[in-house]
Image (tube, rainbow, N blue to C red):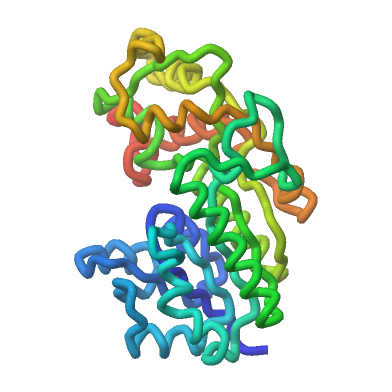
Length: 300
């Protein structure tokens, strides 16, 4: 068996968490559109490459040695940018490829009126971006069948972690407590995205997996809990009906569902952060909530 080599199309926030969890020091390469982000990728343990929609010789060389491919690039009006640029390479020029992981979104389920939904549930995408995600998922699953390789679709909920959380929002003054009756959101800590990816890739497991924590919760409760940890007054509640929101932000509130995570647990994964309280408490205690660097909580 050849040495494992990971390649990540779209090495952003979640990909950097994945690389930081690389206990075996497996080679990991990843793409960004912006060369000025190369150093940040190197710091996370990712060998950086530029991808602007075209497959360069350097990308082709890296893909030829790749055993495990992770795709974290959103589709656009022209379809899936990775399949458009590298579809032929995936079919013909990746002899070492064993497994593909595609990072999707629980947005593909659309609105279920607050009811629970699992991987067998209907996809009722509301937004254009989620409609495109459903199509991209199907294309990746079809490619896997065509080339005889397992494809894992990871449907992610709202991503948070160091630098992206209610503690940081309270500290910088951007936290708000919007209240919409019976509204809940699903969440996932970036370290559990990383853990799920390493787990699935470790056994070359394919299928569709909701990667979301155990406890969908009202967004205002998360902000209030973070404020309690910090010992500060939470911001006042704002009725959703009168809130000033961008069209995209308002669209998120048009979807209400509780997403179940039994499939990834049945595959053997155990969540480090089963709910937002555990995660916020850990980040606050370790002092890495602002940017991932440990420091005294009181220094923030």
